Length: 80
Image 1 (tube, helix red, strand yellow):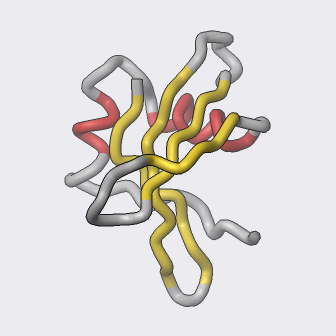
Image 2 (spheres, rainbow, N blue to C red):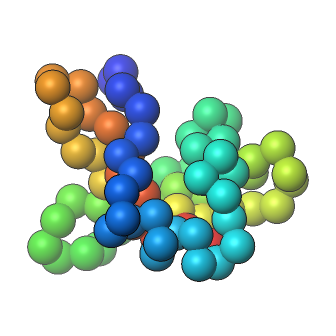
């Protein structure tokens, strides 16, 4: 699957950034080979990813895929 990038805005970034992570660290999780599982959220299809950015600490990200002009983007909704 070709991913067009990340979908950041004023809705999801404050929720992800409040736990001391940067956007770059969260994006680095997906640059590697994170463990990805489905999330049991009932209203939308969400996924969970666990991986390590370059800083070396494990990062847990809840995300969904959102379509933008035909190619989906990662939309993180929570990160710790």
